[in-house]
Image (tube, rainbow, N blue to C red):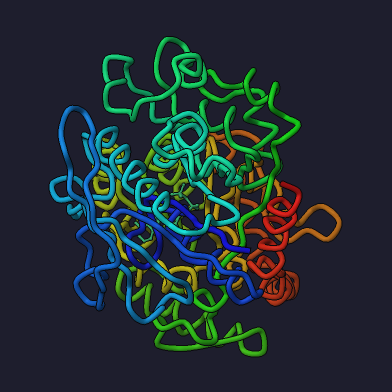
Length: 469
Ligand code: ADP
């Protein structure tokens, strides 16, 4: 099968969150399984673009918003990522260091139009266009209802929702930016008197997937206004749990780790990392180390962290360490930085994005905390499991589908029901307690490293869906 993934992010070219990880890994595993998967994304001005060799594959112009835009399709020359990678350069729109910016409606519309303009010149059509999130969500509508792309109208489309909170809404005043479409199809763009790309993809795509089953059910209950649409289209909606790229995320080979380890020497391996991290951040290595890694936003429950950590440290009398790596809302960043003054020796934070440090923290930590309000899949808990780090998670979305509480049969994690200070504090007490049941704690560590959350199994689910179309 020939599958084209259209996405705003793809690790290591450009990554803001889990979307980048997924699009950087899934096509590679699809190619390894004998299919022909490619990625088409905007040419952001990232380090990867400058450090690699590109060939000019195609160039032309598109017309958008009363203006001609020149675009160039750049192909990475060496198949470095394990699949063909194409980046579309539109001068003034894509060539920025920021993946997301204030004028994303225009930027991503131009990207989608240019991608389809290029593909509609091909002698053959791919089997599937796999669109990821709202930045590529107008593709299913455009190939079916814009005459300009009628060559592609029979290509099957799959739309994957990595985050249903962001739907890409824009006003009908900007409809002139879209290529001409059949008048009668305008209703397929509309939701609540706005153009809503996500709602249009849910209606127009041949299949809609989200990145866990639980999240799909949650969207049918609460989806920023689209819940009734998800219920209506339920017959073509599927949950496919993300996998992790075990070639990147493997403590035995991880390029960011100075000490490698596997299940055989997990205790010694993690102890070295913990010692180093505790030294760098001035923490107490005899305490359990609980980390939070992620965007400091409400969805992730990050606003709860300053008070919850403060109270957990107080109630446990400083017998746990907390370390936060993240960036996001200014207020949360400031509160987390201020907390350092009151909790020296048992708390620290690194405000910013640091890929290498995140790998070292997965290796060093005893626990990872994820008090998410919304978590479509969540990759952190899966990376943590692979690195022998026990997840403490709120029971929601993909966290519910991948973590079983250690109090339940076959369990290995800590789950709590509410995204609240009380539940985080309570789970900290449970984490401390478990840490001192040394045999159980060590047995859990070994067990979780062997849980299979790899793409090898998840990619088959996508293949089944493509084939069913
Ligand atoms: P989301 O896509 O909603 O942000 P996911 O759990 O799906 O959440 O993916 C988050 C990814 O981003 C993980 O690979 C995580 O390690 C990484 N990440 C998030 N914040 C940071 C940060 N500040 N530094 C390094 N990596 C980060």
